[in-house]
Length: 170
Image (cartoon, rainbow, N blue to C red; front, side):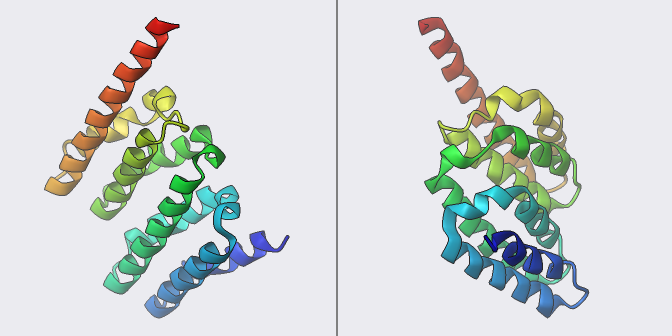
């Protein structure tokens, strides 16, 4: 299994000082994802760390490449939700939700919304761990960040209501 080495190389290059190298690292990892599919979910935390850093990049093309890469990761996650572990993901979300960069906060809120919509992944059970970050996003200067945080909280409220109904029915 060469997947750890395949993933590690572009992840390392995402920290390069040259914007073109960071962009091509995104492209390389995107191509790896297209070939290996759901197997990459075992490396999701490391990949999201790299994508998160590139979402905060000063170079527009690098941020755009990170966004395309993120879209592919979400697509794979949506197709294989049973392979996601909420516990391993929540630490990433909780830490990154406190980041002040609006691009990073957008990434975090998008992932929370995606995971809340997945019935197979119970991210609601871990809500106390990332709730503070969501509340801090409500006070962000960026209207988009505030809007997305509010959408996350709305989705979480619906999911909590659904869980309460399910618990009463048992």
